[in-house]
Image 1 (cartoon, one colour):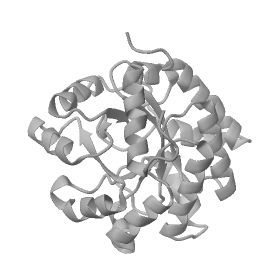
Image 2: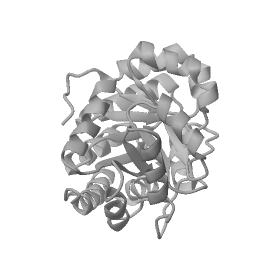
Image 3: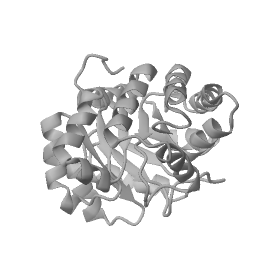
Image 4: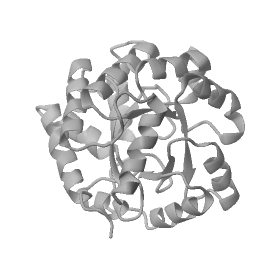
Length: 273
């Protein structure tokens, strides 16, 4: 288990190390900061932690996302129309992570980093107690300044790999990513899927050949059965749209989150053989 008093990036590393030591994948629910309402969002995060989440991924709302599907876009827009600064959303994400009692990473787009300033954004992430940031639209080749800012702030810069990434690119991603590599299990935007991509397992295998970093799989993981399948070969299971939808549809968002996370947890509770 990650130590609560450890530096942010180290908490993420320790969480994955504990998972590997126990031969089990980490459950990584994705939430949109401030959705559906600020205080309710914190209560949802707390429910996720109580229901068995190991690491939270928290999206910082952005108006023009390239990776988010309709469910997450609608949630982000719901937050954005209320207003609020990037800094306030980061602080709220940190409050939610503290309530959940687990390490958390932020996910957002480069425009927000650039607009706030790379050093200031990274420092705000660290000050909020978040462990790192996933930036889907930042390439390895253009990431030097951001990685320098992350290093100065003591947070992880997490990079994504795609099923279309050639092996030499997976090696480049493995060389610069910190904490884990995010494996995008299929092409396209996030969303609830009936079936997992058959290419996800192959992608994880190829990433493992390129780096020793843990690999977490996201995009399309929607049901406890999907989670159990992904947990059989990956280090982390990221569930986004299905959870955000459950939160949005429930009369009591925290209860909706607790119910789904508990079901997902039950699917991946057993150590791998």
